[in-house]
Amino acid sequence: MLRAIILVQILLLVSCSSVPLTPEGKRVRKIQPDWANTCRFITSEEINNASFGAHPGICAKRAHDAMRNRVAELGGNAYVITYETVSFCATGGTTVSFEVYSCPEH
Image 1 (cartoon, rainbow, N blue to C red):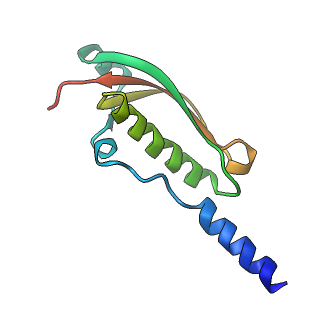
Image 2 (image 1 turned 120 degrees about the vertical axis):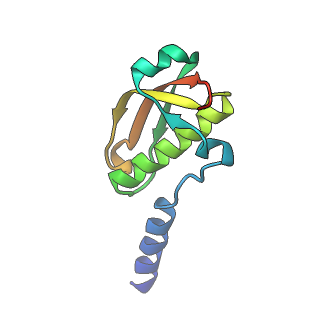
């Protein structure tokens, strides 16, 4: 019984780990759709974060961190979310569709 409790605790800890933001991902910002007119469109992407047992808020944070890292990988510094669903990770997790932009630095 004790082993089962320890195993469940370990699984909960692992499922709550976050996606670490890269230094580049930390500089990525969300913009309003109408601001995109002053930026260069790069591409559209989608991130899905589904893993065992985490709370919807944790799944959403992981997905947003992964999205910011992806924006930076693609050479962007800004994004606009076009669609988002948030649920428990075990039942699908968070899906974020977004557009990637390169905007002038202010």
